[in-house]
Image (cartoon, rainbow, N blue to C red; front, side):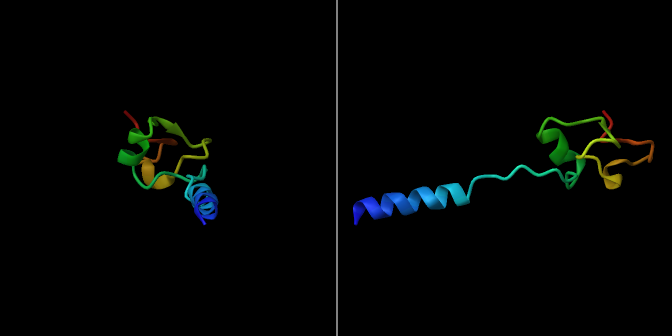
Length: 61
């Protein structure tokens, strides 16, 4: 029983692992918290909602 529980715990831990995402950040605070600023429109992390002046650079510092 104890071994089965440990194995199941391993499966759960793998299921909860973060998945890399190539989506724009929800907002610039989230981008900056992750270490991103001045995100070019060619980046997979760029989103028009992050670009206040629509110059092609999101979350300008």
